[in-house]
Length: 226
Image (cartoon, rainbow, N blue to C red; front, side, top):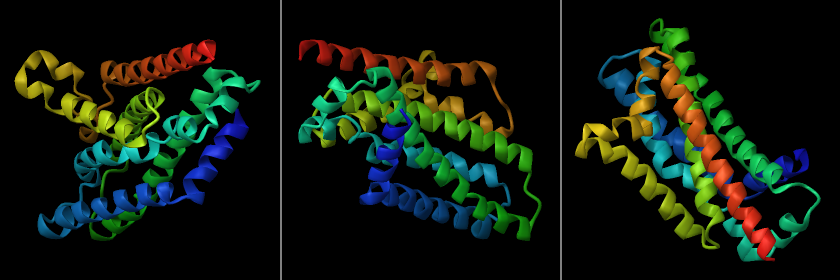
């Protein structure tokens, strides 16, 4: 499994994908950082991640749309399906690789935290809780993105499906309060307040596992057909 993880991470950095993801996130994060700190005179590091969560909606597909769709398009999917490594391990390896890119991006945001320390005294515990919630949200997004990529050989279609689903869950609470618990963004909103909600944490993890399991099931069916 480690070999697949290394292969995926190399593919992110041997191509523009990894750099584009990290670059776009940090550019947008910098804009929100400037607005909060210099316009509104705020030193609350965690509040910037409200906007950061919105950014994920549109840039996570950059990481995930190629995971299986590209393998299928280039014909290398057959090698994965016939390799001695189980489909489950392949899916998990691809998920871990994409998650590591997000973790690297999160680590880069500590530069902004250091800048805030120069202007004030941001709350480190709240910041860490926010980063934890942000990672849970990113993992949920990545798992669905991988699922979307597994059902098509077209990366663009996979990306559109992923973004469409994220936007749908984003706006569902606007139609009815019943859908509040289905909005991943809403669940994340408690973390920047310094609260680790057990129910929301379990929901994030359950959603992630469910998407990965569906991906495994779909890929297993493709393997049995072949």
